[in-house]
Image (cartoon, rainbow, N blue to C red):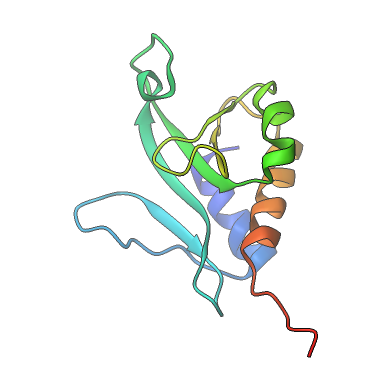
Length: 121
């Protein structure tokens, strides 16, 4: 999936637009409207920052994950240990490497894990 298609998908699926919280940075942050928690951050990074030999700059998306599925997801193509975020609770996805279904699954999970919790009171 391309950066443009991902942004369109997130706007359509979750009804949110990205913001740029860091000055002089291209990072695009996707947040919940209510609690303002991040469920994704879209950035451009060198593959070397993900432990690869290539220096190509690629589009990545960091998403929150459940630690129980972290290891199985890391075996999938395009999924890496988080860059720039907590290594236990976040994953990095290289957009051009991952299957769209896997990307959407991880994005849905991240959205659910970061949404406002409802009280049982």
